[in-house]
Image (cartoon, rainbow, N blue to C red; front, side):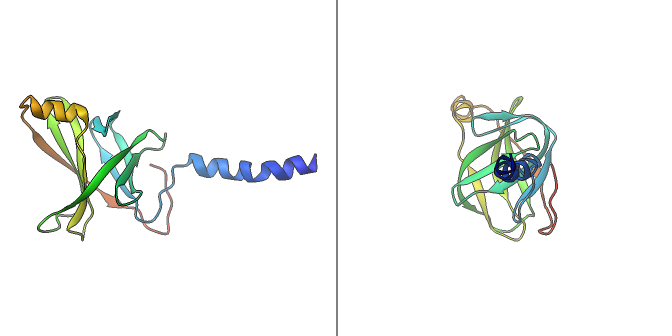
Length: 144
């Protein structure tokens, strides 16, 4: 019995940590007031954590771990305008376009999904929407 308890202890301790949706240093938090597509997945309005995974991918997720992994590439801009997510809007459909972090002229541009490519090919008019981001303090963990 004692060995079973010892074997289960790491699992019992890890489960609450996995379910809290904690941020890590470098993660950014954003409140998106509308539903949108991140890659091929549609996400509801809400508070999201934007987390760069590597030089090619960004993860965007919420406290229910609803989210998406999106393929990106580096993009530069002339001057830093602060931290924000940029969206392309075609009628009532909105697509994540890029992620910019304050103090850097290099951001992450999202590759257009098939659905967005179809709308572009159809000649749909594009509007641009921006949502400001903020960084979580490095010493604090929080739930979105």
